[in-house]
Image 1 (cartoon, rainbow, N blue to C red):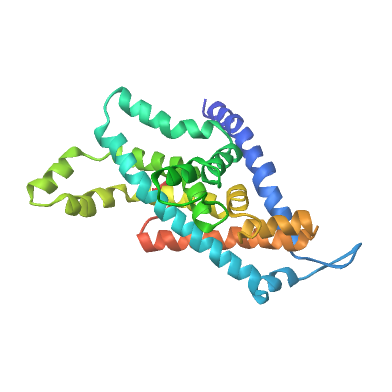
Image 2 (image 1 turned 90 degrees about the vertical axis):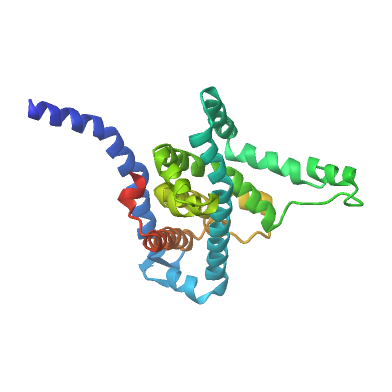
Length: 285
């Protein structure tokens, strides 16, 4: 009986294991191998660390990564500030069908691809878009205003694309909170800010950290939104990786930048977990 259960378990896990092996582990191992290759001529490869040395010696690379990391952290913070009240309302205040409709409102934009969502924002923010026309109608500006191709536009697009991934873990965490905890906080003389800071936020911390990790990683690895809404001069690290692979056909340097993006972003996530006193096992589950 036990052997039959084990066999059934292995059969169930096999598709997932193959998926991880073929589409996650092997490509990353191959990318790591390519990143240590040095092209001595068009048909001769040798082992070396020249690509990694380029990242640290050429300031354009690491400055772009730092800029991308800072903007990703800023985007994650803004997403959290927007998502937390929404998640609180859905989890604690909405009742019956209202909760389902609010969840649906968060989900509907993701029925379209990231490309469609990004172009939607570009239509709104362009010089002849709705926002520019609204400002002119209110008399706040004298002529058309171009709101695209800057950091603010990039952050708007990234926040919009990451909102659902912040709301869902927050709602899941907040739904499990006992109402008596909040009531006890008020009974003991705590105000709204005190109850939120001392009771709600600590309780929701696993959801906060989980949502921040997902949004940060998605933002750091985003390509379409920074390139389309930031313009050709947008300095985003994934744009450099794309340039090395596709434009310059320098797969060795592109692979090294890809490995560095994975390693450095993982270190940032690990540091965030340490600073918040959370563990990956607790956050995920």
